[in-house]
Image (cartoon, rainbow, N blue to C red):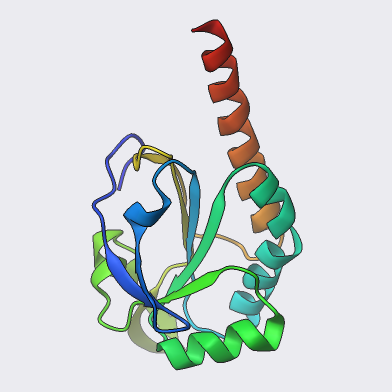
Length: 163
């Protein structure tokens, strides 16, 4: 996925087993963050980072969605344990992971495995990709995304005033 590319609509279940389409959020920027596994150390740091600045991201007009290959039940447990205020999407069949090309070969304890490479996609209100954050480091990542959302919002407000 490259910036300016249209993001094809997709459908997944959230932690409540509700059906969610990315098109449900048309009209708002969406921070879609892919993480390897619910309730593991790095993923917890990243998810809690988004939790801690969630209000600021909301105030900037954006939506946060977390996504991994976990089941809705595992996502629900993770969300409740850390009081995460945004939806966690369950991509058990890896359809959306493949769409966004985040499945990569990793080395786990000397064994090669295929897993999610921690990546965030900032999707514009028109469903076009604004920015990709590859190989994310969990610490401080949410602030980096917030800065990108604010930058995008400021640029579009300036354009609106010129028009």
